[in-house]
Length: 299
Image 1: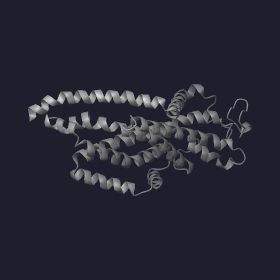
Image 2: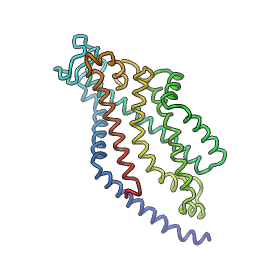
Image 3: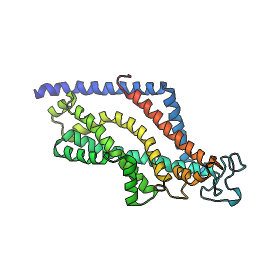
Image 4: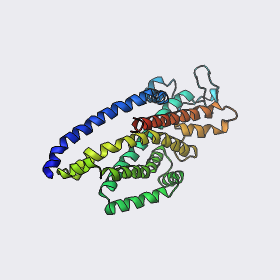
């Protein structure tokens, strides 16, 4: 039986690798044909490039005030997007805020996905007491509303941008654990996993070579959707004073600091709010496109 399994293993590996290459080409073609997802991807690439080049592109110091140009309207000479209630250039603050906003979403989603991947794979593959304890902890975290849990974490750690990132990072861990665990419970009974065990592969080899690569597709889709959610959550924390603190140019803090001027100079609030809306919408559109492209039924 062992000899038969050994003889049958190479064709299985070759077939799996060939199918994976075909699937990769297929999902790239599907994503390329999805025009909304393609446009959203190009928009996000442009936002990232602008965030990287902010020191070169920003016309003013984002923290510099000018009492002679308070709440200047859009298209004011020297201030294309106007100024806020303290005379700070909105365009410069928007550019520097892009760095903070993208950092919150990307770092938070990466942390949640990494912790969720490790815990979800271990819980689903080994089962037993570890699975029971992990799932009970996840149930406890899921019993709290997301925003309430974030407020509690920030209240304990103290209001700041760093603590807001920690709070929003913790929010996504339970979802990733449950998502990955459910996939692993199916994958560990797959024929190629059983074949790998039969030929003597260790648990570590099975998880790294056969389990983890096959859960990357749902992780990629979830991360792309989760980044937008975390940006929105962090902006909400900053809006109520629990996230980035003044004079930080984080977009949620910009909306919060300018809300008293909504009826007088609406651009002070609407410009950073529109930036949040467009970036979150773009991440959601990209996530939908990836979900459709990576769905085997769509291929």
